[in-house]
Length: 157
Image (cartoon, rainbow, N blue to C red; front, side, top):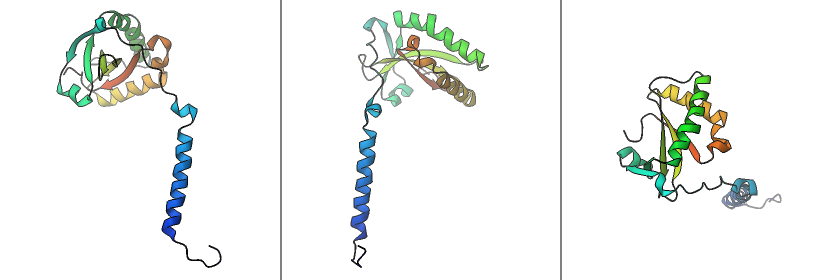
């Protein structure tokens, strides 16, 4: 190349791109990158109540159920009070804010319990979401089988 040879630049670009791609792909498959969240324990059948079949649920491409039984009691006794206490401490608790628990998944076997904060005030909803995610409440062992999400309206609306 330095001796005045004619070089096909397309070949060099493809080669350098391929090499970059190889190194990036090799880096992205490191052991820490492949670590995923551990699978949640299966939710017992007696915890599933009626299925919610609204257009909002169909757009999720997942099935949504109301909870009942043990999982609902755990949510009401342990999870909800701590979540409300955290948001009140951050001065984010407002009237018109709803806390809902849903079981969401492609099948009952793959469903996970999800706590959803619903509020029509989008700015306040964004603040609440940021506060809860920054607090890492849902990373604590007590919140182990629960996920977290936000929505402007309840899924059954």
